[in-house]
Length: 150
Image 1 (cartoon, rainbow, N blue to C red):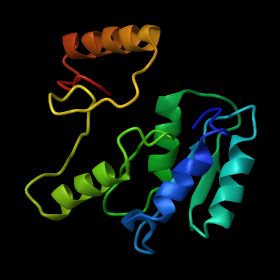
Image 2 (spheres, rainbow, N blue to C red; image 1 turned 90 degrees about the vertical axis):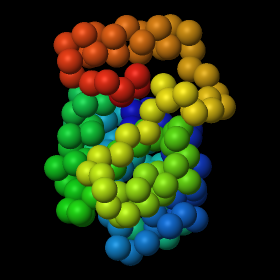
Image 3 (tube, rainbow, N blue to C red; image 1 turned 135 degrees about the vertical axis):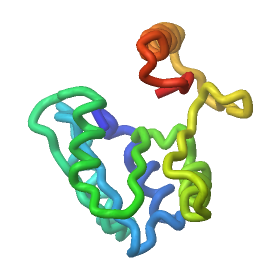
Image 4 (cartoon, rainbow, N blue to C red; image 1 turned 180 degrees about the vertical axis):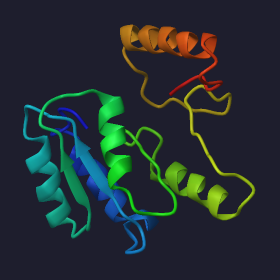
């Protein structure tokens, strides 16, 4: 998460009331060197909602890939998932992904805005949409992914 002080409490609240708040699950929040109150805000929200979670702080902004890597390196569970701080896919979608894996028959589940069944409730700004599409075209041209959204 980077500069997410304004919205991270809502994310913590949503997680606290979900099945993901189970003691068997490990929640890790990674602050990607935010220069606002993101880390303090998430710590206060975790305390307020009594949600056990770990907060990893990167010293300076290193980008989403580095933040995801830092979180995955801290993860100790059998399954690992990463989501954006705004929970754009929603808690129920995350729970649904875990049900697919727990049922067996697959090792990876990907949730993507590019799926035909996706319902975009809040669109990203046009420049962000175009830059994301260009990045994904590049990834697909290099054979690195078949997903329309990473």
